[in-house]
Image (cartoon, rainbow, N blue to C red):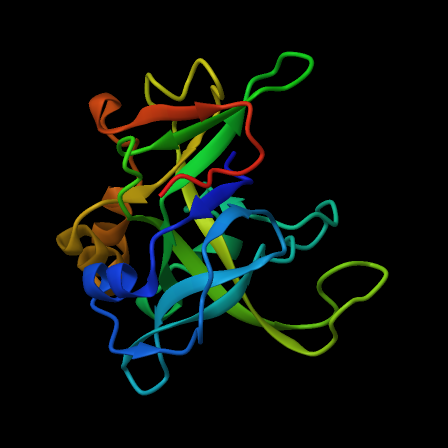
Length: 214
């Protein structure tokens, strides 16, 4: 599963590719290492129908009767609990420039995947929701209402599988794919839940905790 990614492209690139009309993120610095429960930019449709970008925390609360771990990746789109968040109003785009997977060896080795060495911008297909409760570090939790997101995953392609056999994130690379994910009926949008073509990704770094390359 994807539990680490980076975003090193600026807001202008995100706004252009995702056709964002309202940017609520403020002065956003590069984010070379985004981990679960951190805040990161997400593109959604606002209550007034305007496409906007704002900060959300990564990870849904778990479904009932599951371990109390953040759900950062969702694959079971036929499951009733997750299906209710797959309507268009709860879909979102999560901007990224690379993502990491770990080998199962000891010690584990991080491998960073991107579209090319230049780390062009892409988006994860995501879902979002509001939630009230404590989030953040146990020593200093943040109480109140939070906006949360999780990333859709699918089966790994031939490049990712030797590193992480179980899954890879659903990656959107064109404005047309972004529009389909944000606006199409659910069944049509879920046709995007497929691995990226093998030759569309490459390993761009190994062993690093952050991917700072722009």
